[in-house]
Each structure stands twice: as structure tokens, then as C-alpha cells.
Image: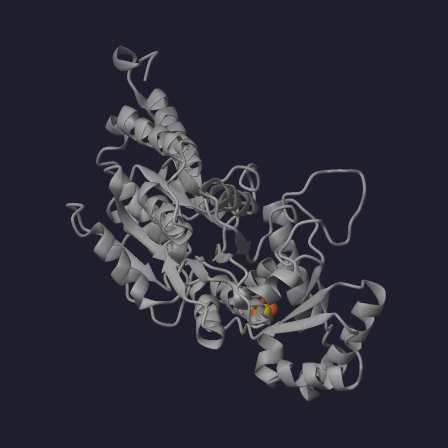
Length: 457
Ligand code: SF4
């Protein structure tokens, strides 16, 4: 009973979050920045923030995450961090020689009011940014939004690197949103299969799921190159996967460089993957290859073979808006009932979208943006569920309420595999179903009385 003090009775809370279903903005900015080849993320604030952000990513990805910090002490905290930042830019290019420094702010530097674009201009004027090197920045105050907002802000800063030459490159920009490195790899595999040339940004595949080669590389081989980011302004279109993570960057490219964009859901599950493939097919003017139809058919086959185990099972979910929207649609499409859904990221349109997806499901749905895991736990106490889908923090609720748990989302701190096995696309859908069925059937095997205990399920 680790959460023994969670009461069943729900009282209105306005200014108190308990067990947040989110983390802070700079973590998202740092993760996005790692998706640029040769990029060193830089935290403009105190060392403690940077240490926390790096360790959060390291614990999830089980990879070393390098990032530098402006190392604020009392002086910078009172008078501003410009001097620290200028010194840092000089030191970083001299010692580590990255292609790009991606700076994000923290609560402290935001509260002081440090102006990163102005500091960058000063660094340029003082010759601290070597020719051919880049400094980009995003404002990421953690007292608003969430890690998703920070991710989106840094992706927008990447879109600002676009330098069109006026000749179309024949490529489609694909902004994958906050998904795992393995998901980014899978999205590239899908676009290649359909025959579409893409610029995927950010791209953390090969950065945060790289091999152990015995050789240390400060900057791994993966990541979107600067040349590709510059070329995004010459692309023929942009597909942004996820309103919260990717849409702002896509709209910026549309507005500034007339690169038309479409905002789609992240391709989790059958229907969202269908829409993604259809968008690629339309853009490329091709038919869907047989190989891909085969993968789709396999997913449909598993859904129909195992439907009796999904039917009307109640599910509670917590995570990030873009992931939850696609996951909820997937669960509804296989006749499961997602009844409690919480994201820590603000945005009333999340609640509206979830209500649209679940309106014909035939049962009441609790949904809250800017909610927390405490509320989710209370909902579960009032209406128990058969399954919980959540990041690692869900394990406290799962243990207390004795509910099967599928770990999905960020962060996953106590299991392996999320970096290597995608959950996007049709193959990813198969993996999601395998994970869901695995915990449901383990539960059934454990709970069934002897007379109904079956060898074959
Ligand atoms: S002070 Fe702000 S930026 Fe730093 S770790 Fe805390 S919430 Fe994140």
C-alpha cells in the first residue's frame, strides 16, 4: 500500500498537483536537441536543473546524455546570466566543437528575464560563434506547460534554421514528435517503403539507441544534419505528427517559407497508421506496396484472433496528449473501453478530442488535461479497471490496486526494450497488442480457478 493515503472521495483541487503526470519543459527541449547531428544541448540555468534533466533522459534511454550548463551561482541569479552564456558558448566551441549548440532556458533564467536571442546576437558580434557553426535557442519556462511544450519549442527552433535556396528538394518534412528512437527508425522505414524522400526532424535514432562499439563518440552518428534542417524550407510539404509536439514547427515552415503542412495524429494503432500511410501515398502519388499491406493484414489478423480478450475491458491511461489521442483511438477500435484518461500537459482541446473519439463507446469517460496521477488513482478507486497503461510511475497505482500494467510513454525507468522496439506503425501495433495481451493473459492464468485454467488461450 504505497499510496495508502489516496482517498476514494474526490475533492476539487485548484492549486495543488499530487504525483504529476508530466515533467519539466527543458527535458523535452534536451531530448529534441539530441535529435540534431553533432548537437550539444545547453541548459541556461543552475547546475542542478541540468543534472536532473540529463539524469531523467539517461535513466529512460540507458545511454549517456551529454549537455552543458551556464552554471548559475548567486551573481548570475541576481544580475542575469549573459556573461555565463557568452563564456559557455566560447568554451563549448573551443573544447567540444559541436555543429550546433541548442540552448534552452530554465525556471531561474526565465524569471530573471534573460533574452537568449539578444545574447546570441552579442555572441555573434563578439565572434564567439565560429563560421559554419550554429546556436539555436528555445524558451522553456517550467512553471508553464510540460516536457511536451519544451520539446515542441525546441523543434520550432529547428524549423527556424530553414534557409531555402528557392529550388524544391522533392522531399517531405516529417516531424515525428516525442516518440522513441526506435519509433523514429520505424517511421523512416515506412517512408522508405512507400518511396517518399523525407527529412525527419528531430531524429534520435542512432543517438539514444546506439550500439556498444567500444569506441566513445562525443557526438553519435545519428541525428538530423544541419544541411537537412536548412533544406526543410525547400521541401514540398510537411507532415507533423501530433498537435502538441510537432504542429508549431510545421506551421512556422508554412508561414515563413510557404511549405504546406498537414497535422496528423501520431501513427499508433491501425487507424492513425492508415492515415499516415495514406498521407504519404497521396504526396508521393504511389500505391501502397504489398509488403506494407501484408503488415497491416497481420495487425488486423491479431485483432480479430484475440478480440474476445479485448472486448469491453476497461483501461486507465496516463501520458502525453499526442500519444494518448492515438492510443485511445486504437483501444476503442479494438472494443476496449478507455474510461480514465489523464495528461499532465495543459490543453482543453485534448479533453474535447478524447470525448470525440470515445463518444460511441457506450460508457462514461473521465478525462483531464493538466491532471495528475493522484486523480487517476481516485478515479480507479471509484471505478476499477482491467488494465493500466502508463509510464513507470503508474506502478505504484498498479501495485496498490492490483491492476495489470503496460509501461508505455516517458519515462520508463524499470524496464528495457522501449528504445529498440517501435510501437508506431502496423508492426508497432502488433507489439502494443502483444504487451497488452501478455499482461491480461498472465492475470487470467493467475486468477482462473482450477476448473477453468486453460492450456490454450
Ligand atoms: S527549477 Fe524549473 S527547470 Fe529546473 S528542474 Fe525545477 S522545474 Fe525544471
